[in-house]
Length: 366
Image: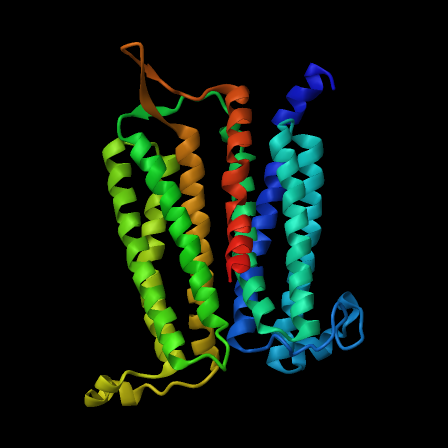
């Protein structure tokens, strides 16, 4: 490849556009997948990869649109999954042809392998009618979403620019807190997935213990997010890091409200609310449309929280540079140019893919 073609590869915006399109399609897929779980519609279509004997793309749209709601969302989930798969293929090819950073190019193929694994997990869940596979499938989906979100960040033109990083004595704390918050967010999501797919044969005490652990971990996550926002304020970081940090805080403020509503919709009003008239005035409809959307919003917001925390982590490591001392002199570790971006991409290859490894390792540990 000639130097001129290398410059054109770096300047190409298509890898970023394709990654962004894939991310925009993946979040609705995560949402509809959560709705399938909420409605217990995972087995609404008993065959795979076909739909009631039809090719996935040739299933009559009249039957799909006007048929039972559980078939509507399950078949829609499969169509969305196919669309994400096609976009991931295009993104992987676009990265291979349009990005000269070898680590990022290979990361595109990792994303392609991940979407194939995720689709196979969904198919195996149907063919084997296995709730454990449903839990793994539900945990792996948000991890894939985070992987694509990471690709959106590292393929952005500004990521490869020569702008200097912000240097401050507090930036190292921001970086550490961002990574730890990301890990806690995914751990919290994984526990929530276990709670959503808890076996009907599980002891009530096991369900209560898991629920309390979920609540306790949520409190720890919120506390670390507060520490992160405070550290961001003290470090005087640029808006690229500050804005997603505050967005993370907003999502974590909304999530407990959705969590309480999810608990009520799943298990009913607490006994102590009987003394108040407002609880009796609000009847809960099992798997009602409103209730299902609120429960699914809780699950989908969890995926957004993990992805946002990952964005903060990636940008903090790219755009912030802690002050280092060498031979008694203070040096500013600013990251500049495409060479620095390439080094960052190699170092972040593991950071971006950690949700995939974490979900697999946690399941093996079970």
